[in-house]
Length: 410
Image (cartoon, rainbow, N blue to C red; front, side):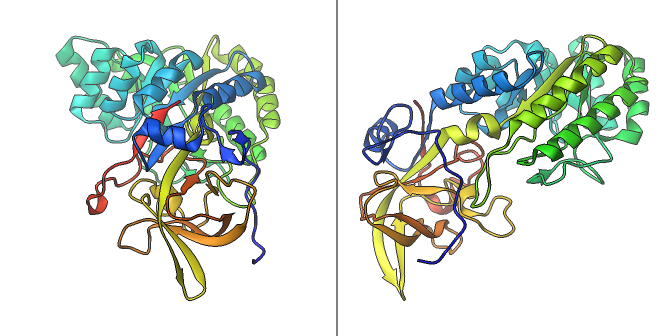
């Protein structure tokens, strides 16, 4: 078997008798609860453990918000409600889920570059904070509020002139559809004051999926500097400063978990000075995949095992239509394998190099390419780890008419 980079050890799920255990249940039990394969399973205890560890590392006065778009399953959002300080949503549908979970409207914010009139009216009626993405959106929000007889709560999403280095997805720096360019923000702030909107503060989100603490520290320091500079033009006190998140999780061979200590230490050093200049501002870190990504697993069943010119293929009942990210077709330039295991032969037994594919009529339907797994036969279960974020909802379930996967929180 050829030498290949290996995945970081993943310990969020226990292994009992060489079988993966999620939420205290073995693979066959999970499949029975889900009504059969394929399905996603999310472990509530793993989510709670991640939040507890994060709270223990970060300064106690930092507020933690959950970015609902990472996993908007209502049961997951409901479980997250008592563990975080607020929710951040990106659509009216997510807003309804957030409100149904019981999060107070004052602790919900709404970001996204294309909010419709209906979404703006819904956000204003609910009393949540709208993160303004453009000068035009400010005008539309003000008109919507006038129609409803309400005062809109607004924050300015800023597109700074820096980016988060080494991030998986850069959200700022240069020309971007997200946020208002920093040099345009003072004029927008003046307009907020003229329109009589309730100004809450700033949202400055630089990028996502970063595993380098030095990059996160640099971005946070630049974010604080920018916020302090822009606050001088604000029409009122800055009560909310959302500095984004960007905390990554290890997906691919060679990646290691993020070391939180330098990030937390830098925040502890910076916050007193920020509050000295801004007053009692609520500093928010907004996280999605970091909170739920490692707490989810995707299970599918081997339907066929075949040999083709020296390679072994496991054909499963799941694939890119259920897990687009694991197939490599959701943002990867060069495809790399997610961590994949034989769910009931995680570490022991005979090992072999296999390629795991789905049932779709396309070569893109690939879950694992030439990976070492425990030996599998038809009927065995394969599991894709790191699947709690941007899995179910980011996938084209209707592709080729196959049924959607199940979802359970255990």
